[in-house]
Amino acid sequence: MADLRNNFVGIKSPNPFWLASAPPTDKAYNVERAFKAGWGGVVWKTLGEDPPVVNVNGPRYGAIWGGDRRLLGFNNIELITDRPLQLNLQEIKQVKMDWPDRALVVSIMVPCNEDSWKAILPLVEETGADGIELNFGCPHGMSERGMGAAVGQVPEYVEMVVRWCKQYTRMPVITKLTPNITDIRKPARGAMAGGTDAVSLINTINSITSVNLDSFSPEPSIDGKGSHGGYCGPAVKPIALSMVSEIARDPETYGLPISGIGGITTWRDAAEFMALGAGNVQVCTAAMTYGFKIVEELIEGLSNWMDEKGYTSLDDFTGRAVRNVSDWQYLNLNYVTKAKIDQDLCIKCGRCHIACEDTSHQAITKEKDGVRHFEVMDDACVGCNLCVNVCPVEDCITMVQLPAGALDERTGLMVDGSYANWTTHPNNPTRVVPAVEPAE
Image (cartoon, rainbow, N blue to C red; front, top):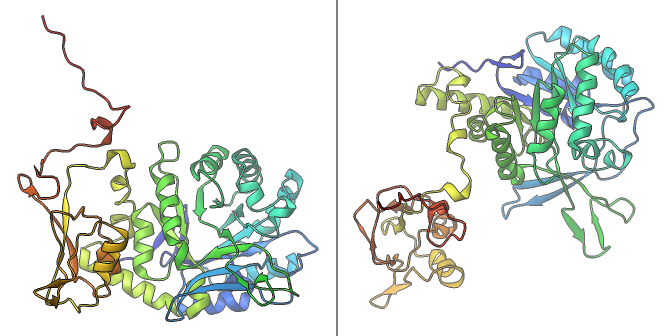
């Protein structure tokens, strides 16, 4: 049976599933319920200086739903903990004593000056917590005060604060990065230069999810006004995966431990993050949507998949996808595919045809001999796979690779089995032309 035990920068937990710093980890009651449900660790909701912040007393969340009312994206305008610092510290200490086998990391956000960090770090260390997470990601409320994303967007600030923390605490330091930046590698490099033990990402994305067209106020609305907040949930997963992969394959941050965050809802999501280099994962929106017991599905699903694949430990597949992430210019231009429709599975809905006809390459028929019939025309198909993605029937449409030597009816050329990319393509004005020895 697969061994899910996790060791992330020396912080041990029975499985790689941690709850992210957020409302579900705000107090002992929630954290204890999470541990009883089976979560391997938690990152305690972000602590700050006293007096504590003040949160709004009205709606704090906005949402984007799918057609079946399934939650796709979540917007949050809640700030860091609004409970007194000493109360949080007391509860952290007690929970860690009661649950010594679980990971307990404390998220921290204080003003960007050395004295503030120097003062709070020993207080957290005294609780016996396993590590700290520096919240450089919060995009709302705190960033306007020079904290959160306001620090995370400046690599030099990231490096500076990490250095302070490494100087004033023995605990492992995890630096939480903001996605609200052009190049995620730069703050990661700053954190690494400062000596961070790991990075975690992504934090939430700056957003307004909707506008009430009666009151003309952004949602959630507080007395007729709304504010930008942090966007999370399944919709942000592709952005998070990309950013995790950028850090994992960057030569300057290669080997830097990563805690993956962003839209993780299923065991498969978790496995994908770990395949792209994450040493563990943090979950929030899924727990807020389905409750803490969702971790049972995460554990069972990951364990079963690992058993099927023959993986005995998390290390067996962690990072295995990183080598397959490439810049576009290095993709093989001689790789040719065509879409194929399984007529036995086809329900004749026509979505593939209309998508291709209206927005793509007019490569799918709509009738044959006067009867509805959807079939791919190889002489027009570019292999884009739009039809696969809009088809409501799983595996009804598949992409089939043409073998070397086969005729591509669209181009009239034989498929070349050799590798070729954009860097040497004749249409590339900056192509690399192989050197030719001068004739004697």
